Length: 214
Image 1 (cartoon, rainbow, N blue to C red):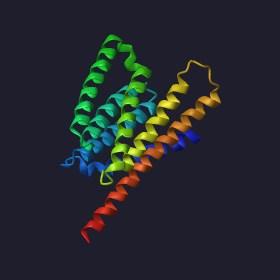
Image 2 (image 1 turned 90 degrees about the vertical axis):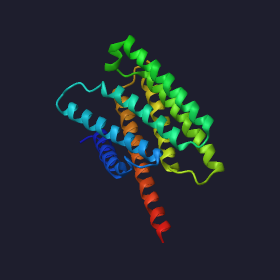
Image 3 (image 1 turned 120 degrees about the vertical axis):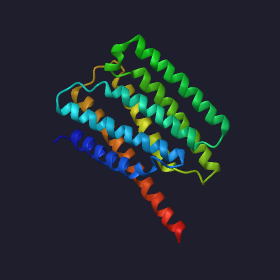
């Protein structure tokens, strides 16, 4: 088993664990937790579907686009729910609507793009979500009671790493096979770190809840 397989499989396992643990929030009144739990569930289903198709030797590249759309939609709704400012929330809804319309037109205009990596889509959606994450950090500086700050840290690390590696891989330069594999391994490591941070957030919240009961 290669390093890529080890880190990819490990991140998938932790993702599934997180999806199961956070599933109790699927009907929560707290919309931030609910949207994030739906996000994890969507990612787990997408990942498992991709793994099954890969084992069956069926092209699964289209799942990169379903992942892109689901991630942007659910994380945008997550930040909409977790932000307290009305102006910030209105801005998020407006940006979400505009970008989804643009992506919809893009896929309708170029249907074959759904079977390829959407470089523009990845960069645009990741950049928007990174901006939300950074804004949330500034909010946290003035309000230490903000929740899910570890998850926000994980999102920032994951998206920054993804957009950087994706940009390097799509510079048009001919990368050696070893460098290409190294980039994929690094991406798998970053995603594993992201999932571990999400798990730590769940453990932290559970401990706080137990202390509050005493």
